[in-house]
Length: 462
View 1 (tube, rainbow, N blue to C red):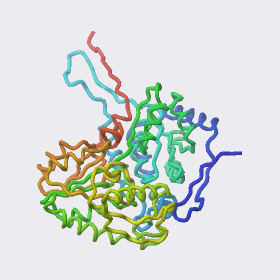
View 2 (cartoon, rainbow, N blue to C red):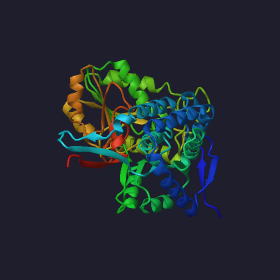
View 3 (tube, helix red, strand yellow):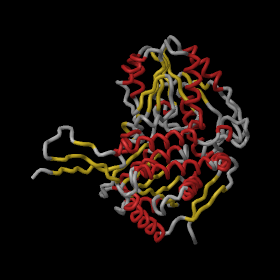
View 4 (tube, rainbow, N blue to C red):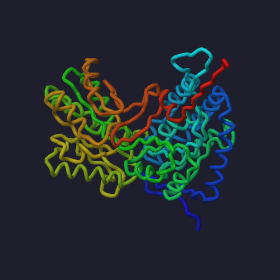
């Protein structure tokens, strides 16, 4: 009997899509096609590669009317927010724009008469992208486009929860006329993925997902010497200072905490507020949160859909219950249909009177819950922000830029924001520290992670 991957929709629990898992023979054939195609692709001028990417982007955007409800059915994001193509356009266009400069050979800094010396950036070969479901297009494009621009071939294995996204990418590349084998979407189970990573046939893997998933990938790849890009868990903090523009901080932090039902890699999961403005901030945050409308994501009135899976919502329920047992206070207590154990529908929650003995303040939530904690000063805020095994982003809310920089220099994180949050700027490197992972994406540095340096030391005068 053929093994399949089933996509269970969070909207109503139905099987929205089902696809057969690739056979071992099909996987091997895909790798052989990729290797053969990559050799020719690496010889294609960077400008030509960029033209393919831009036509692919155009083809993908042309599918918007089909893709938007597909996303809702697959992982629950409300249709009112459209697709992810604003970010996809920005990141694709930028990485194409900077490719020639970022991939240009670097001459030695100390010229020597009679010698030509430089470092060339060669493609790694076959890059595997293991993409997550929460931002299924944005997270995938972060690696797919720069990997291809750098001259690599790409194998995409998308999350089972967003099974159709890989097919959309394949359709877009096919419509762009990309040479066969340069990009391939595959459907694999976990065992096949681990076997492929351990085969030595993959030169680089990029994975976005859980810490446990990242450890499994490192283990599977052990001994192959492939390079790894791992963006794993997060528990992103915010610190609100007394001079913050309060209405701006409230509106943006509520959105940063609850957009996409809180299922954001860099979403706000804990907020530290200076005691001088704590009451004002909490009052505004609660009022703003109560504006959410939880329901069917296919309804234009819905501003928060279900979480992607019921077990994710149950984790949030457990974190809330534990926090309440330890003295936290729930400020929203919104009643919505189907918000019960075993259901992916979940109301947003704001907790006060929280501390770091509660899992909601230290362990990843990845859902619509946030704790707000009063602090006396910068020292306390910094210590609390750093009291986490994760470090993806941290946001600081103040009108004093130099003060924000001074705080940011002491926070253990990959990105420091001031007066904004939950955003990727493709001109800045995307990376994390501690258990959030290793490697780097986007910006010119992202290209360094998708290429290998090759030195040329040429004596011309003999």
